[in-house]
Amino acid sequence: MNAPSSIPALEVRGVSKSFPGVKALDNVSFTIKRNEVVGLIGENGAGKTSLLKVLNGIYQPDEGELLVDGRPVKLASPRQAFDTGIAMVFQEQTILPSLTVAQNIFLGREEEFLRFGLVSKARMNEAAAVELKKVHLDIHPGTACVKLSFADRQMVEIAKALSLDSRITGNITILLDEPTSVLERKEVELLFAIIADLKKRASIAFISHRLDEVLAVSDRVYVMRDGKVVKEFDGKDVTEKDMHQHMVGRQLHTEYYREARQTACSDKVLIEARNLSKAGAFRNVSFALRAGEVLGIAGVIGSGREDLARCLAGHTKSDTGTLEVNGQRARFASVPQATAQGVGLVPAERKVEGLVAQFSVAENMTLAALPKFVAKGLLNFGAETAQAKSWIDRLKIKTPSPHAMTGGLSGGNQQKVVLAKWRIAGVKVLILDHPTRGIDVGAKEDVYELVRDMTSEGLAVILLGDTLEEVIGLSSRILVMRDGEVTASFEAPPGGKPTQIDLVQHMV
Image (tube, rainbow, N blue to C red; front, side, top):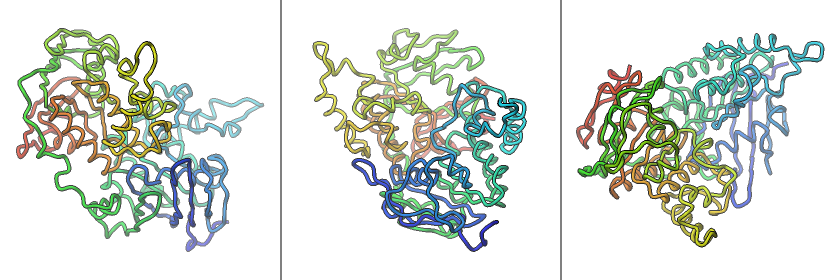
């Protein structure tokens, strides 16, 4: 029997949670009403994801209680939370690449498809097709997830959470932790349509660092800082500026992209591509990148820009064309070769390719420059720790110590560790593939400051931005790619930036 509509679908009362060296949640209380979308915002490390993990049964609170439909509950596991009517879409994907789409959607629920003691793949695929239809994903349920793009895997993750809708007869609560961070605009709009439809019989908690998205979908917004709820807003009566101020305790910087620090590039060419091509990815790409320059590359998914970035950093090889680094012919067969020539890549999937979660902060920071810290075959731990401490202070990384496991940091702090790794390695060309994806506005400002620091020191940056606004704001020059080709080039000096419309008409 459903609880009265006046009773919140989900309520948190005085919840606290501590880990060694940090109090992640400090006396947190909030409610989600029925058929309501509640936005949850805050800087990286503010406690948002920790709170959602408590609601999903991954963490158990040290103090406080949870109530579902007015009844106290103790959630000891995600499965128990799911059976209670709570499902979560994680910021860092939980999809298992070796399993099929259907197997991922119903992972842990295989008993629902037993027939004569065996799991019926046909019945599971049929049920998965229903869930895929909800997210408008036109793929066969029997497809192995390893074959899917990162964005498609995210839609499978969302479909997995939405499968709760067809299993629970009462009210359900969906927890969305950065669900749009890897999605293109059309996919984000589709997700918003799904949220609007789901809201008719569900309650939703929505975390996003894109504050405009929070405003677009939320009825109410809670702001978290340092593990506490510091402000509650009505979604109709708040601006992005208001939210930012309460998130970080300061006003949004008037020079968000630090355009005043945009340097004039030198005549020194650090890397030059001539008619670079790779079958099925990109063709005839030419450019010259100079010291002190930020070269933005704009394009939609499938435009070829991600493939180009990986080729320039030694992750894949080009088929034809030439590449010169510091005036010398180069053709990288591996990442170490590219690193040795002074080229590094900050990948979009930082947790998969950018760092080793089981290594400490210091170990990750020095991973690409180990020879610098080795003497007579032994690693100089003191020098490694000192270098790590220096970058922790410089980038304002929130970590208990340089020896803390990197996997325990928030997404924004992990990204700062990856950036520090390449600075320590001494690269002269740094390729940034969505460097601010999934990090908050405060951490973004730190990244933008670092980009300006690098160019002022004579480094060059190739930027695949998270938004067109970011590409325009940070870049000295912008290439636009469509269907694997460069379709336009724009100079982007301070005070003379192209508009988003200028770029879009060459992107699609």
